[in-house]
Image (cartoon, rainbow, N blue to C red):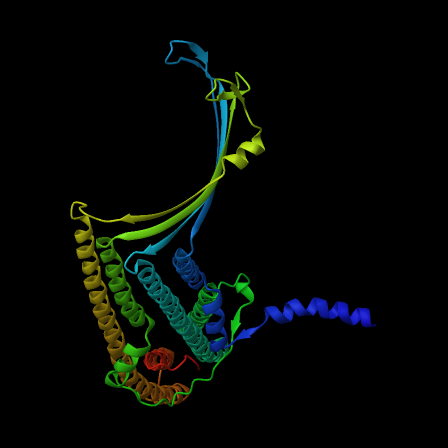
Length: 449
């Protein structure tokens, strides 16, 4: 029995999880962790982190070892005119270390600049996350809008079905002409098409949101329905209330501010090329030599031959140490350093101008959101009034049609007007809701429904 229950649960669990219904908050949180654009920006952040670690390690000494092996063959003539073979083998090994002692703070300035670059890259990641969050919210509201339009179309379809059935009965008994049935049938076909179009638009919106979330199983993707009431309030925020807050919390502005500091740090780095660089080095090494022609290394002062020592003895006898202090003093490099400094200062101006552009863009976005919110709110009020009027006109048209004082064409026209008015209300409502969410987002309020 237990095995059967476990087996049943194993079959049901994929279905249950595939039918997960996403809230807006869940969709946003998932997207900022898994979206490909966010991941790409995060990789750039990791590259900057590694660059910072490299800059910090420049303080450490560099240590390297070398091993040289050389074999030479041939013959030559000595100072006495005697021709001798000169075949030999030599080996040398050494270990050396060097460390920078002074460079006018170039290392510290490089670390400081890289830290600014790391901060800017993090703000770039935050900007991508914000953009994705807004796209998620807009697409989420688009799904809710298309679902509401689908309901409106289904209601219109139900009324068209009733009208068709009534027209079919009255036509069959001969009380109404065939043209009435034809018009009712055409109206029914139009409403079926409208329902199908609304359903396709809903599926298209769901697919687009699933792609933003990078979900492979998009066919089973669904979002939570949110009941958006038609009684909405006027905008509580104005651009003037939000703009200062937006300047403080928008990551693109923070990134531009940090990049100014990075450009200034780069200028300081470039200026260090005017100053000398002092470094110290030390090393140890030894060597081995072997003549391939004779076992003798030469002759002593008495003319007696000196037998070559073995490998380890030569390494012991030839072991040596060295220590040095080097100073590289710039004197003239064709004025390139000065030009590089000027170029760095130009990059500072570019960074400052970029900050101004970013502030201008944020200002335009906030003001546009404010204009859109006000415009969409007025559109919603106008559409709501039009919906009430068209509903009243539809009621009169139905009563007149039932009393025989209005044609089916008049009734269908009134119903089309009412359905269009309902769609306009829904469109204006969701447009206004997104504009309002956008204003709150610039004010630093997280997205939610």
